[in-house]
Image: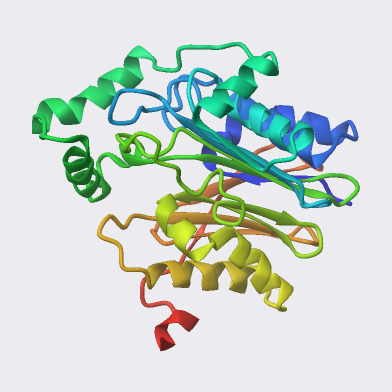
Length: 316
């Protein structure tokens, strides 16, 4: 079986760790966690972990999920504060609790009980980025009004794509042919406190099933939640679609949504044979790939699916 890691471009810093695990005979689950853990520790990445951009109150809240394609076991945390290693905590949920998703203060309590080290996640650079829109726009009467104003303005600003939302995701295939997928994020910057996107929602931003394949998402999580995008890609393959068609169909469904805060959604998929692919609802997007046959990490272009691409939802 060929070894494989694929994911969002910002996963680059973690791929060597993940591939080392795969080459030593380790599991896809371990490789995904190792790769994402490295990204969460990178203060230069303002979409994940330490250095992530905060919510409207200036608090960094983290979401993450992990899924085992062999067993369909899953674990996730959301609105986690004060702990950097969200993907490791999601693994604790999967391995040690009879639950799939633990959120907010419960997630922080679990981190304490599991022996995680607490950390102030807000860096000076992230704080400066967070402050800028408030300086430019002034303040609104309520957090709800401020959220709507910021969301509408930033989602339409091509010069500040990193300010609005971002995520890291990784799919791995190990020597036994098992798939695993993981996603971690600090969520949409300036989000309403407690907002949870697609990243920790199994089926929305993350899904893996050895029988058919795996898929993960980045971008506007509310859109992926509404379409159950990651699960849709895998389900389309279950129904006989090739990976490329499954990805394109899922992206086409996203284009049919009415959304005042619309922005891109990016999807990566791997089928059960280890073939990979990726699409985006915006042009010019890329993803990365590393195989067991090479020490190089290759950046590849995602297929752009334009708004007029055919979709079954158009017949409604």
